[in-house]
Length: 162
Image 1 (cartoon, helix red, strand yellow):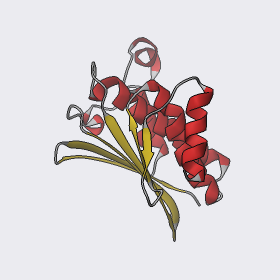
Image 2 (cartoon, one colour; image 1 turned 135 degrees about the vertical axis):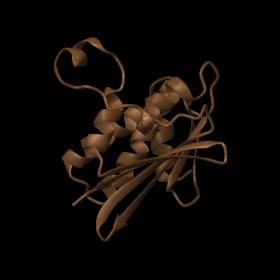
Image 3 (cartoon, helix red, strand yellow; image 1 turned 120 degrees about the vertical axis):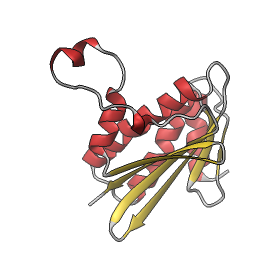
């Protein structure tokens, strides 16, 4: 088992869970069950890739929040009440230094970007639940796009790291 896979597998065991996951041969993607216990291994997978490129703390935190929001939405809405797989790929380009993270699932078709932007001002922000996570993603990432293709939801986020 490679270092990345060992790290992620051990994190799952530390929580008393065995997270069903597979890392691609090229090390650029991870396939996991879309369950709460997979959040930490997905975060560890992306964090390790970004730290390898010397990613600064601020974009690392922004990416961490965006990844959590998107993955939790897949867990909560894509397959419920069933459990399905999610594939998360993470590629870093060096010129200019930027990361692209793609989330892919075969769950119910859903374009989170098609929803009206959340009202984050005043009382509506305090009273109405929902929509704020994708607002955070759209406002902290440099590019966010969605497509439904071949029976799969595909959401991509891109963040400049320089």
